Image (tube, rainbow, N blue to C red; front, side):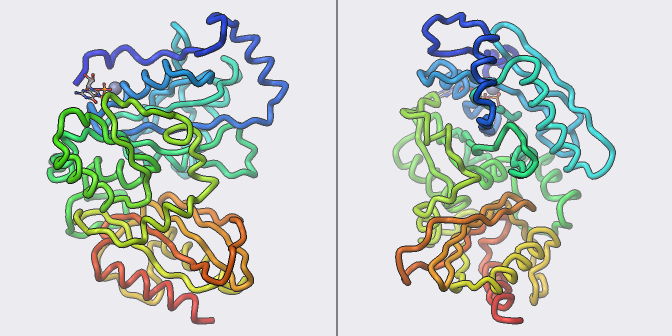
Length: 394
Ligand SMILES: Nc1nc2c(ncn2[C@@H]2O[C@H](COP(=O)(O)OP(=O)(O)OP(=O)(O)O)[C@@H](O)[C@H]2O)c(=O)[nH]1
Ligand SMILES: [Zn+2]
């Protein structure tokens, strides 16, 4: 591990021609065009994978953005009464989350967003927010905090989750969850896990990713790299992958920044995910469900099915065969009349929104699911049977 971790990355206003443009000027300029929402990218990855290296790379690259870096302390849902720290130039501002009583995920959601908004009030708006999690954070707990409903009028939006993996160590991390992790992720809080393949923090960080940066490529052979890539694709076939040395991404925009991962669904990634990949990983996998052409009535049935699966953890019409949990869900919903909608979800939260209309009758609907044990043949079959049943009936 590096010893520079105690020195948090700095917020720098890069590429302004005179490096010391006062913050006040930037703020008033931005306030005039105040409808612009600020994207937030979650940067996650196992201990020592290269998160800080990536942050520093982004901060010094030419992009002209005024970036705020937030170090997240509430990676685990049991440990959220913490603060957000924003580093700006030489100063560091800490904002405590004020948790109200009531449902813990609602209060985290409100306070996480409020904390950032109040930081922006105090410090001036940023163009972009990078949120670095601790190495042991589960991004699935964090994403819903920042994936805010349009209607709530938030000034920030979740742009994507970028997961760094260490090419040299990731396979070992996936094989050997530490005792503590095995207990943490195999026990309590989530839907009564039965026995099953162990899931590590590395699994959770990979399964929730929109982009996976396979870092430290300089430390492995080409064959080792291929093995890593195969394993990662078997866990999360939806994420884009990039191979790097010292987290150097050639083009930041579209590859790690400005992904719009939650307001668009990329058709090519859905098609790739449904090509059928090996089930190399026993704990987490990606499956594709066939979806018949929809009508408005069937859309309602699909919505009810999603609520049942994601909220009640119940596969309608099916006795649970073994334990499972859904981390990500994405889909293309094709309608008989040529309309097309997209589905996007993280854990319990999902959204269906309009997509571009199809070009013709060959358009097929599909839903890609990433989650714990869903790659198990019996469970994959149960998902498909339950979905098909829900859409035929009624
Ligand atoms: N050989 C090699 N070393 C790298 C690479 N990327 C980062 N490192 C080194 O790996 C160490 C850890 O990198 P960091 O960027 O601090 O990793 P991190 O994910 O922020 O680590 P934690 O915050 O401790 O979880 C540092 O010493 C880096 O210089 C790489 O591509 N190749
Ligand atoms: Zn670090």
